[in-house]
Image (cartoon, rainbow, N blue to C red; front, side):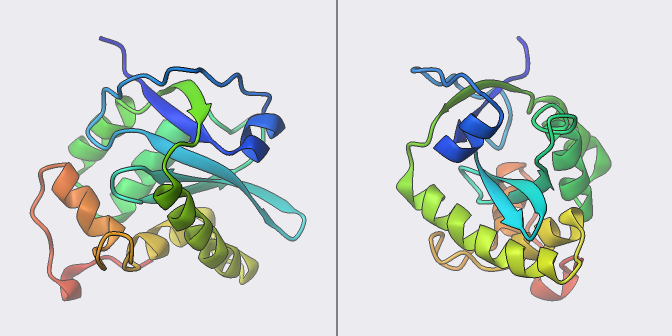
Length: 172
């Protein structure tokens, strides 16, 4: 079975990259499930912010046709590695996270979280924080949508790994 996920795109993201949206999104073949994506403008720079539907893990990457969306698995692997996910697990999840389908956004709760994460990402990126560091910092912010669970913790749970204590968390 081929690796595949659906990226649920905002209209802005779909228009920017001329993405054809499928009426019927596919079931994901990875552990983390499908993702949501939007554009994030910080001054003259353009980014894509992708947020995992299940864990609210953010992955920020340049919004350039040379990079997005085909380098998403590599960007995801970098973020997972930055969260101290074992290299083998991070590589496995990244390999299973090839975007093969685009669809409209469906979950308003995930959209709200993505907008909140984008706001905080904009502040970090404005101050010169790199995309990878910003993604990791945001993953270690509690999500009110998930009863103050951290996306980094939710990822550990989704990947079947033990949850670390607060003082053991990686910081960007």
